[in-house]
Length: 109
Length: 117
Image (cartoon, rainbow over all chains, first blue to last red; front, side, top):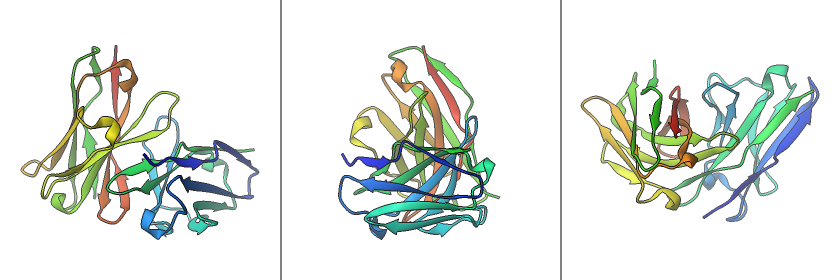
């Protein structure tokens, strides 16, 4: 079973930039892993921010972007807002199954 | 507009079974996968499997094979997830989630709280 690894926690100042990463035990993450990124706040259903590595939904704020970086999927937040404080999860495709990363708790401080 | 509306909260005893439903509207039901995901207290999101209502194709992670069953009813545009042999570790918020083939995830259901006690 593939294991997907994210940073457990990150802290960023308002207005700053932060990059969250998502690594696979199966090897370097490529576009074939169809990486998706989700934001989850307490008491709410998760929200899909990024699909297939870098595509945004109509509701995704411009400050969020997805990419591949150094063999990992990456989510970059530029110009962080207080409301971006949340848990972020990546999801990777692995041979007819999908695996979530453990999540990154992002603190805006 | 696309909506995924899930059934209400449920309480089950250990060893019992559970059925959660996810009623879809606002799109062509048979064109999309429906996935099930859960969030247990103090844990991260966990993928439970997916079903493709057009041909009833299913994929489950090894951990849940033999214990989870996902089906789709095209007459009511509803997907069902059945989970058997419940334990306290199945206490969680359960979500359905839509995917267009190729990793295009978008809409989520509102979540169903399941308590096993």
